[in-house]
Amino acid sequence: MPEPQPVLVVIACDPRSSHRAFEAMRIGVGVVAGENDVTFVLRGPAVHLLDADTDDLVDGDDIAKFRANLKALGVPFHVETGAVPADPAWNADGHHVIPVTREEIAGLVQRGRRFLVF
Image 1: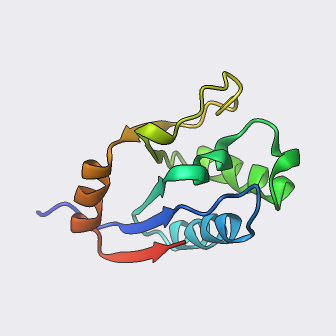
Image 2: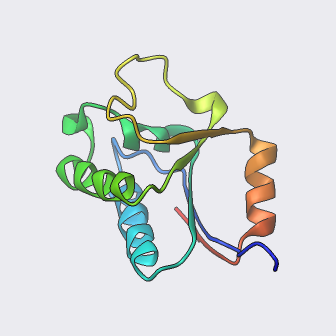
């Protein structure tokens, strides 16, 4: 049986300055709730969705709640390797993170069934 093709949610918006990063996460959680295989990819400044201090994030309180939902569901974040902050407090909640290169992100896109890109 072939591997199921996931819905790919690619987020590149900066959650420190845009509501779009949270909206992408919110929509992705809704797709997960529909019992779909969903892959979340954080590129560039979107990696700040995993910042420990959500006070500097637009929609920070909501981001923390939705991150907790994804963590409880065991949904990992695929994070662009070159974008991971050096801050030791980054991802302090210990969300499962899968480091991916740009080439690996391209492979995820090739295997995707549907796409949400923010």
